[in-house]
Amino acid sequence: MSKAERKAEVVDLKDRAAARQERLPVLKTYKLFIDGKFPRSESERYYALTSANGESIANVQLGSRKDFRNAVVAARKAFPGWAGRTAYNRGQILYRMAEMLEGRRAQFIEELETLGASRSEAETETAMAVDRLIYYAGWADKFQQVFSSVNPVASSHFNFSMLEPTGVAALLAPEDSGLLGLISVVAPAVAGGNSVVVLASHSKPLAAITFSEVLHTSDLPAGVINILTGTRKELLKHFASHMDVNALVYCGSDAEEIRTVQLEAAENLKRVVIEENSDWQSEERQSPYTILATQEVKTTWHPIGL
Image 1: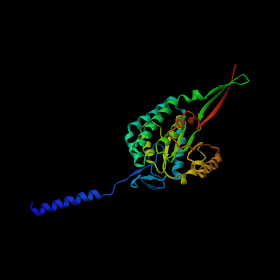
Image 2 (image 1 turned 120 degrees about the vertical axis):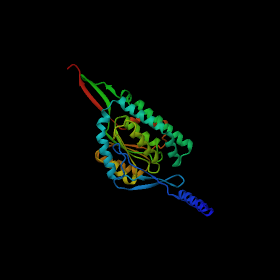
Image 3 (image 1 turned 30 degrees about the vertical axis):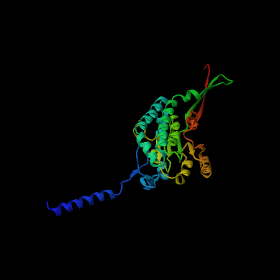
Image 4 (image 1 turned 135 degrees about the horizontal axis):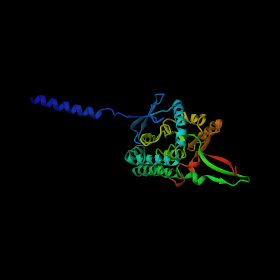
């Protein structure tokens, strides 16, 4: 090889290296989680998610009204089987979720950091999310004994009051907590036997969507937990007005949104729970009483001596 040819080869290698450095990044497109599958939005829309530094890091689906309706259908289909499982088995599956999340801690910490959390904040939030799942896994087969009762009556009957899940619960997860807040509203609802459709944080959706990958590999039946991404502006009214949703949990403090939720939910008398406290690390966020938010009390009379 001549001197000129060697020089040309060196220049070519430099050009190739520069081209590799200038290549456009291939951004991951995060999908919805409906009925145990990962579909794209039927609207074919998405939004570009940016990091705390303003860099584009992913494409996230913009869920539509049709996506929400599909998720409610999946949740309704899954509800009888999930509610009919033993409470102990539901606890086992919640514990399995915690195991899978623990195994992917590094990924969740990185995603929370990418969206603005400090390293210590991300580590704390991830650890608390794992612990919160374990907490509700432990309560899954115990809250009935604590909150059910045998009632005194002035007749020859036994009178029992016990809890049962409301059915399909629609959850508007907190906007300011990408992982811990979402798990804090999902875990007590499913521990009590409900199936859920949850709208993840619009500004911090990464951990919520990655959590759906955890659910997919954690023995959870399809349709019990459905996770959507998108905007409250588009979906809030549909969450509140859907006639096959039995309970709605709203996380936030926007007065106009709360008014909309309460007015629209009145059409089919669905239960509305307003969670305005945004401190998701506080002790009150981890309580068996949060399971009661999506439970109904059923009273049974049984005659004595017949």
